[in-house]
Length: 231
Image (cartoon, rainbow, N blue to C red; front, side, top):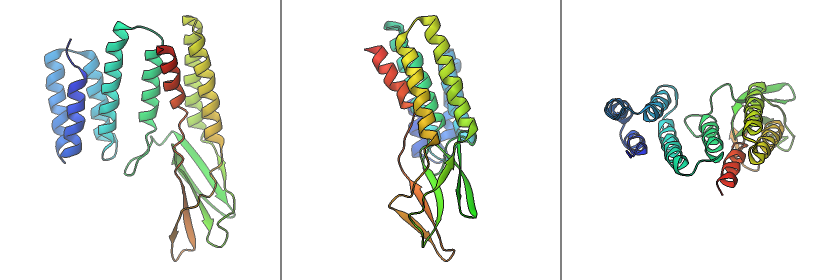
């Protein structure tokens, strides 16, 4: 069996070590896919190419590693089939889609939160980081947040899809995972971002940015469900 995960890991490594690594890695992946004639590796290579073209610096490394993990899990699923693999694949896909890091963030339609304070308001696209604005002389004033509709719609669609699949597969684990995921997504995207202890002052405007680093992810529920189903 060919190690389909290896070219993706090497592509991610090349992209992280050299400025011109990503385009060369894409070309190398095209050659390997054509030689091995693997649709699975082709899908991973396509995801890597989209990450290079549309993502920020370093995002292609995350996608390459995630795609390699999914391919390894798919090979394991052939030897140990079960409902764990689709849960794992969906969870990894959602985590990568909403990945937040300096230099790049989640896709712009994901968790959009409008933060309002007095006469000032800003809109930020949020995955795991909450950002707000407050007056310097009122640092403890609470912020209000309105969850982005798109993020919740995606969560509902994913949960409904898992629910239908649970009905077809007669799997209680998938049904419970779908319910827990939807509850976690609703709670985490409707929780207001409060002022943290660390604040960066932006003189002389008289404002400071509140950066909340919770890194809370409802997608982890899907990975937990996959682990339970695997055991």
